[in-house]
Image (tube, rainbow, N blue to C red; front, side, top):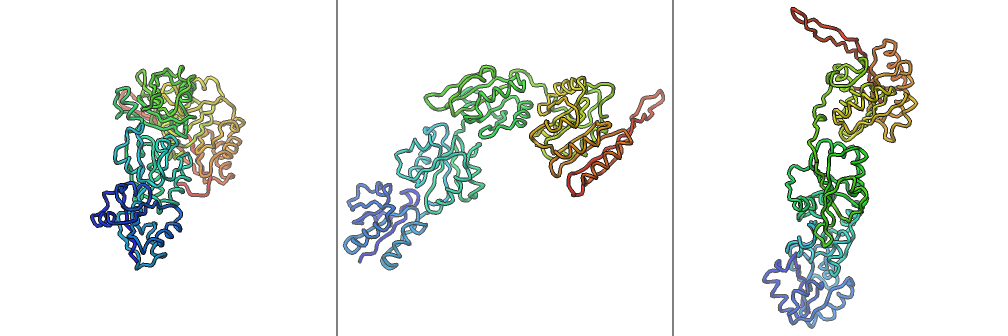
Length: 517
């Protein structure tokens, strides 16, 4: 009996040594996958394509092993989840010679497809050619429809894709075809996070955003790039539109340019034009600038991306907001505004340590506190509630003056209106008014406050100090109180004197038993 030689093919034919080449050249029977046999199609040896029916392959070898020299061409390394161990078990260790090579199993190759297949390099193509499993969007898999390998369509179920890869990665060489560049809002980072950096190799390519800017011949180092693919976060978008002049947006069929235009119109953002890039890199490619009022009624081809460019200088007032601004900075009636120093302390008591908090400002008056809070929660939302129509007008004017987009104004009476405020529960609540209804307002508002949330109440009425403290303690809030007494310097002929303002009590409570610091 002649020993059967099992040669690991490595990743590419170039991985074969001269010893490997000599054995293959002298073989009378070559057994291997179709792609491996193709490399040696001019050799005189009989060819036998290996199939999933390994039992049949073993029977074929046993039939010929005493009469012909046989070489089996194995993927990667014969001992890495391949045919090597099976043949040793079937034929006996002494009847099999193993010639190891580089394993082709790991890592998973994630290849950026660029804008179209013409962006793929020879290195990319070789990896795809040798893949045993191809994963990608249907339009990418269709490009390689003639390839003999397993395929898996990439969809929104990233968790399912990761599990599929994990189930095969130790047995098959896997290539993932990613849109544009894999690490630019692509699947690359998700695979690295789930499989580990050592199990993934990234092959970058041209992104759709870089091509889009090239089409309009503009630099993009000063652009803000966001994605609404599978997500549409109102507050995040409002924050970006208020602060940026050049924005590139990745879309999807649901969150498309028309919806984006509708959003701009709904929020009265009128100083942007939008360029839509449809099906870049294909025969159907179309690039055109639109006014949002026109784009809102258009049907756009997919995939597409959008670039927004501001048409007039941005009013950068929003960047000048800070806690405790002068009362003179705001429109207000009859002194109905939280004094600057008290405002600063009250905001500190709210502990706005997350950018996505939802905050209620109840009894908003001029809206000054809500406007200053808004800069701490650019990805969150502030709802300012006020019943007086004249004060509502002040809040609206102040909001416009400072370019605040994440503040909603509600004209209503407390506490009855709370049930209609928002489907999202608040993380922080500030109560700046209330009068005789303060206890009812505190109890009603507390029911909506998220666990661990904080409520802050300001009052100048001595009776309401006990009302607020008692109501919060009854609700099992961890409750604290401070009195703020502010005196401001006034110019006199010979110097300054101090003029005292009304003392203000600030009562704060946390909706939990954890101690406040």
